[in-house]
Length: 363
Image (cartoon, rainbow, N blue to C red; front, side):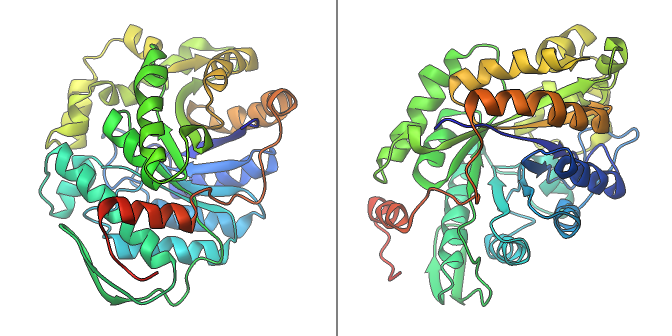
């Protein structure tokens, strides 16, 4: 797999709907390949925050552009969005914007689900729910009437009357071994986050991805690897670039991803105790293209080929710089991404998945 796909994240927690659409349109104008949309009900901080329904923003970007790929990072199809609604929504967007959509999914966070009236279960249950949800989404995308009852979800004579006209790639997001294995068995792509210790990828996550992939007759090498990079950017002003990242300090406390904590004010209060030094160590702080290119090539050498940046500071300046200075160099080195954007997960893979789980359905 020799190519690179570059883009930006439309951060629904940090920018208004109008700004997000502007960022998406500018991304296509600047020659980028993709926009991801963060899918949250509550933001990770309270002061100056936003809470945009990202599916609407992505649809607006799609209507104002011609070819840029769009998707979520990530949608939680477990509670506030039940699997059939996710399946219907993304099928509709793929009809409106053919071969331009992907669906990023994960086990979610309490800050999005508890405020909507749901209880917050263990990670084990959420991972089981995610597997079942993705299965139902794939089942409905076939466009046939189906009845299925699982442990958590069911559909009764359900049919999408406007199924996707082409396959929608699914990215399963995880930073753990069990999630990586699930991505290998059921997804087109594995989505994760940067870590300093790259043996986490080479010795844990990628082997688990390969193990899951072999269950359905493929290998981990065939699965697209995508990664979200959070960057603070301001041309020639490193201090401003660093300061722009400070609202996100709560995300550096891993406990908030698993516990039943959902008030942005509480997350912000504890996040404010995180030092600027740690922010600088974990996030990318950049003032010029060389900072980005050097950082990116570490992950490209590991096999990541689909990379999007969530940008604090000067997002428009970053988008223009990424498109004019970095993308041409990386495409020359690694190649142009394939078009159209169609997933690698086939009907045969899906059938082998069902066989491995003892699921008997007529497809």
